[in-house]
Length: 460
Ligand code: CO
Image 1: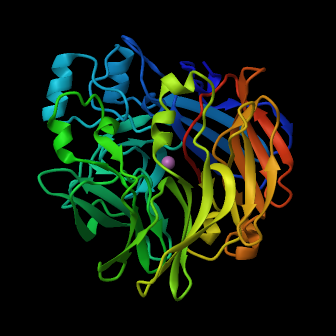
Image 2: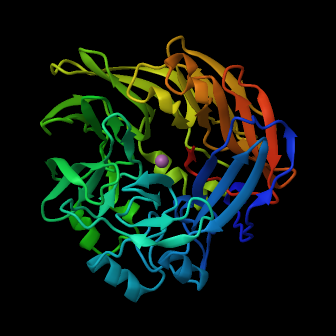
Image 3: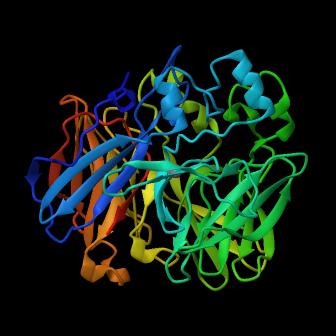
C-alpha cells in the first residue's frame, strides 16, 4: 500500500518544524488542510479512498517559522469507525451490517465525515464534504466544536463539496441536490455572516448528476451537468452498497451546461460534448461568453479508479486535462480546447477569481514514481514544473504577498504551498515554491508521513 493511503494515528499539537531553506517572513497566517487519514474498519478497510476519516492539518506561519498541528475531526463517523463500524452511507463504502444497510437505504443517514475541504461559512470555520452535514472547528487549535446543518429553506441530501466565495458581493455560492420522487438542483447563496442560505434557482431533474463544484462569474453560476447520473429509485433497491453505486455513466448523453443569472435566478441551458469533472479552476465573463476552465476527464471511470482495490496496484491518480469551455450567452455553440494535460487539484491565486487570469496551479500527475506540481500559463500554454523522484505532492495553494493582493500582475508574486510525501524518508514536508520562478524556497519537515489530503485554505 502506498504511504499516501496508510493510516496515520499520531496527532501533534503546535509543534515547531525544522526548516530547510527559508520561510518568507511576510507569511503570517495559517494553511489549514483537510483529508482522509484513517482507513481501517472492523472488517478491514474502507473501499474507497474518499471514505478515510477526516484529519485536519494546520501549518501556522510566524516570522519565518512554521508550527504544525494535526487532528482528527471528532465526529460521529470518527467515534463509530474507531470502534470498528461504518454506520452511515458514505461515498464508496456501505454500512457494515445488513441491518444497518437496510436502514440506511430506507432512511439514508448522511455521514458527518467531512474530509474534503475547509471554508469560512456563515461566520464559522467549517470542514465540508458532500453531505449537508458540516463540522465546525477552531482554526487555531483544530478542536472540533460539533456537527451542524443549515436550518433553512434549501432542501437536498447532497451538496457540492466546494463553495465559491465572492468577496465583492459578500456572499458564498453553492449547490445542493434533492433526490426523491421528483429531484432537483438548488443553487443557493449565503451572505457573509448569515446562517441561512437563500435559494437563487431550482432546476427540476429526472436523474441527478454527480456535482462536486460549480463555476462562478460576476454574472452567472455555471453548473455543468455531466452524464454521470443516479436514478433516485435505485437508492431504494437492494444491491446498492454505497452512494456511488447508484450512479452510472451515460456516454450517449451530453454534458448540459446551465447558466444561472446571479441577479434574478433565471436559467439558460446548452448542450456540450460529454465529459466528467470534479473541479472547476476559474470562470469569468468576457462579454459574449462565459469562460469556464475545469479539469475534465473523458468519462467517470476515475471515480472507480480511486477505490482501494485499484489503488493498491499502484498510485493511479485522477489525472485529467485542463480545458477551457466557452459558453456563448446568446445560446450559440459551446466550444472547448485543452490548455494542459496530466493535472489534478487545480487552484489559482485568490486575487484572480472571476477574472481573466494567467496562472493555474495544479498537481502534475500521471508519472507513477512521483507526483509533481505545475504552474500552467493558460494564456500562452506554457508550464513550469517542480518534481522530485519518490516525492508525491498534494494540492498547491497559492498565497499572494500582501502587496500583490489586489493586482492581477501579482498573481505569481507569492508562494505556492504543498504538502509533499517523501516515500523513501517515510515523512512528509511542507514545500514552499516561489510563485514567479517555481523554484523551491524552503521545506519544513513533519514528524510523520501524512496520507494524501484533498483541499485546504490559507487563512490570513
Ligand atoms: Co474537491
